[in-house]
Image 1: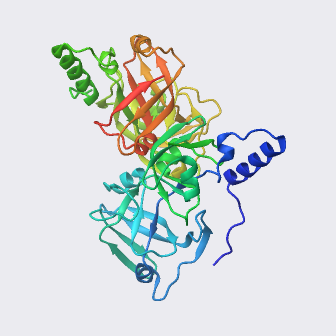
Image 2: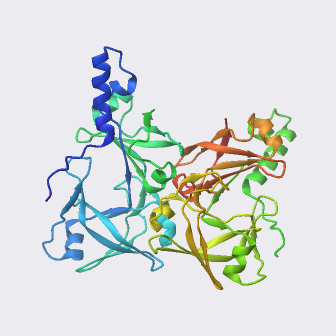
Image 3: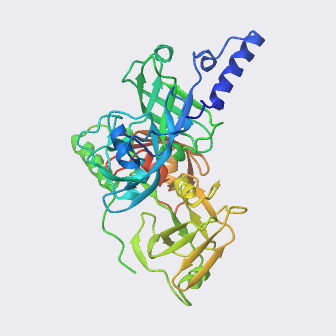
Length: 225
Length: 225
């Protein structure tokens, strides 16, 4: 396993600087600077979550996923390992990234543009709620693994610690909006709040949403009810 | 050439029905029903515009584009003919649709997801404003045509007749917002108004924007300043 990344998200640095500057100037903090935590917005490119059993079928007995890059949520990582996804019309996506650690179910998260390219018609689902969704075939270096179900577009969401939820005045399951500025500005409505003490404040949008607004590290983003 | 399509856009039918129902009931019309024209929202998938000279280089001397499907704007069509686009990293998009009739310049319009797949870094431009943009190679059945420039992401826009502009209180070059409802609701900001007596009211978004909000024929859309 690699050491946790020391690279900070730009939003984290900006938040620290903003708080320090307002404090130094003795000025009242604007609302965003007064937030308990920085708002990090990340694009989730297509990826999958796997059980340890699926990993072993695809990569070999006893195989353990290796961390390639640590994600913003504690303990989560993009694995070095990738897969080939074979869709219902024999079209293929290569280099599908696996996120670790292993989970109790197998799930592939695609953007609708990916689904169109593959010939899928995939439903919008809350991560983990995969009953009745389409499946696919996964191919790894040691074998194939057939997923009977689990291919979804994940509902856009915001991970939040309870102190973030209190600041924004929302609770688990509420919906918020994310205003993204810049030349391709969009307001992403219906961002689902997922509140848990284990989570850090982070909004997740998919590549269609991220490319629609051309999200860059310095793109201004505001989260509100 | 095929005959103009008799298929009506759902928004056109809904607008007619709405106006008739309110009139029949003798009720005051809500603002959307009172609009002079229905709001048609269409997704522009990747496509190109070509000069007649480029068409002849790609398809042969004297070749004329054939209409495959008439578009909502009068006289505009998707051609039967498609091309292969070869990007800067030798990656390829097959079946790139040509829109007709021919124009005075060559231009390829891609979504950012397409550009990422090809390995392009393309700028956001108003259609027709292509100075200094990247080029590409096009391949047709009769030969290659090298575009020195002209690969862009087209700025999201609304075609409007002056009577539509008057109704919405905007002028050519203004920006509006398009609220798209449904489970993947987004508000598309900064829709550029293109006002001309030759145009019909139609909002154009690209496939990233269209897939981000999962635009379907029955998705509710509202245009406002």
